[in-house]
Every structure is written in structure tokens, then in C-alpha cells.
Amino acid sequence: MSRYRKRLPQLDGRLFLADAGLETVLSFQQDFELPFFASFVLLRNARGREALRNYFEGFARMAQAHRAGLVLETPTWRANPDWGQKLGYKALALADANREAVALVAGVRAAYDSPATPIVVSGNLGPRGDGYRIEHRMSVAAAHDYHLAQIATFSGTEADMVAAFTMTYPDEAIGIVDAAAACEMPVAISFTLEVNGRLPSGDALSEAILRTDAETGSYAAYYMVNCLHPSHLAPALTGSGAWRERLHGLRANASRRSHAELDEATELDAGDPDALGEDYLALRQVLPRMNVVGGCCGTDERHVAAIAQRLGARPARAVPS
Image (cartoon, rainbow, N blue to C red; front, side, top):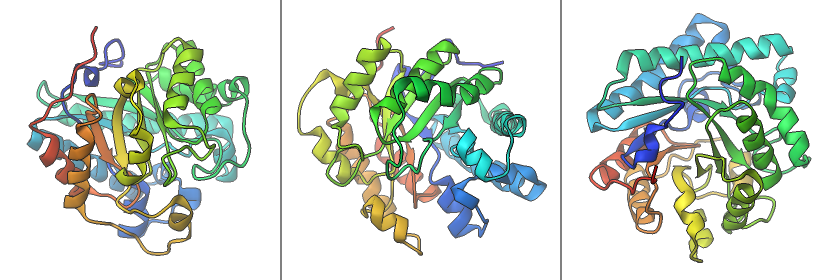
């Protein structure tokens, strides 16, 4: 059963770490073949499961060392119907893979969870499309229907919440929130931004958050941004507004490159972990509730450790009950 579904502990303001760039670690550093950037395929065999478990356990130990909480995302960013079909998964096999992913992460939680290090298990959702570009826009209703099966699968597991990452336009995010509400699952939405600080759809981050809240009764537990360098977020924060209070999380890339440049890259750009940590510290000054922090493409334990060191003594503000 879920431990934290009724009240997510990261809403209380203390520092919660997240993991890093799972797929880039596995493919660039550990030489795993990840077709279509799908890490859930590693659940098929013992070697892959061991690699995933070792990866997540590294962050659990880090959270213990920093006496921080931890949000662990299941390796299911590509485990939705379209990508599953490309990978040879039929609906039942895909549902089984999502359940297996939760079980693996929940096993890490069982070994490391404590009052000092509460571990939240999050069922991870990815976009129907590419994640860097918009190839086909769904309506809100279509997005609800598309993502409902995966969310419903997570609702029957030990997952405490679901989180949709690399959202490129608001309609898909709104549909996901509606589907999560239908399943009574807490949900976080993480948008991605281009170098100009706007979503790939051209929407401002503020507009995307405000519209999603307006059309869903503010059901989302919180919002995040991911798969961008912190410098790409800066243009989105030039205006004021209460919407900033809804931003709790950042999972940034190590690289300053654009999505298009990263898509063409054949070598990993790991950037500077210490500089990334300083960037997070600077953003805390303008995002007072930012407390769920980890990495995305090109990052690993070094980057998240640098972030934890900078933010560990500076708790964010809690959300009122």
C-alpha cells in the first residue's frame, strides 16, 4: 500500500532530493542500449534490474547522508501505449512493466525509508510524443483518455503519486491531471522549456501553470520544470505572480545546450556539477518553495550531491494545510 498518498511529505517544505539523468547514465556511462530512450525495458532481465536497483540505491544513500527526503521516479517515462507498441509491448505486458517498475523502486524504499529520509514512490509518466518537439497535439479529453490506463495501473500499486515529466504543451498536462484526479492519485506536472524560457508550444510557463490550475481546480500537488539548464528558466521568471508558489521542483540538465543541440549530440555533456549547484542556490532566492531537486539529462550523483550541499541548510517554505 502507498505510505504517503494522503499527504505528500514534500509539501511540508523540507529538502527532497530526486535522482538524476537515468537514461543518460545508463546509456552513456553504463553502455546499456535503450531503444527509444526507454529504460523500463531493462526490467526484462536480471542484469537490467540490478542496474536500475543500484542506480536508485545510490540516491537513497545520498539522501540518508544529507538527512533529506527523496522522491524516486519509476523508470517508466516511455511506458505508455505509443512507445510501448514501438517496443513490442501489448497492453497487458505494458501494465505489468509499470507494476514491476513500482515494485523495484518500492523495494529500495523498504530498505532505506526512515523518519529522517522519507522516500516517496512516484509513478513516472512521459509525453505521448517526443519530449523535445510537438509532433501531434492532443485535446485535453484525448490526453486524459491516452494516459488514463497508465495512471490507473499506478493507482493499484505502492506508488504514492504520479508525475508527468517533459510536458511540452498545456493540453496534455491538463488531461493528465484530469486522469489523475479520476484515479484519486496525487500528481505533479513538470514542463520543459526552450532556451527562451517558453514551452516548445510557445506558451509562457506562467500561462501553462495558471491555465492548468484553472481548468483542473488546482488539483495538481505542485509543478516542476525539467530537461533544461537553469539559465533557460531565468527568462520565465522575469514577471511576478502567485504562480511561482506552485513551482516546487527543478530537475535540470547539466548542459546549456538547446533541445535541438542535445538531440544531435553524440557525446555526453556533463557540464560542471558545482556550477549547477550554485545555479540551484540562486534560483531558490526567486522560487521560495523549490524543494524537490534533482537532475535530468547529463547529470549523475555528482550533480545531485552538489545541489544537496548548496540547498541542505536552506529549507523551502511549506504549503499550508
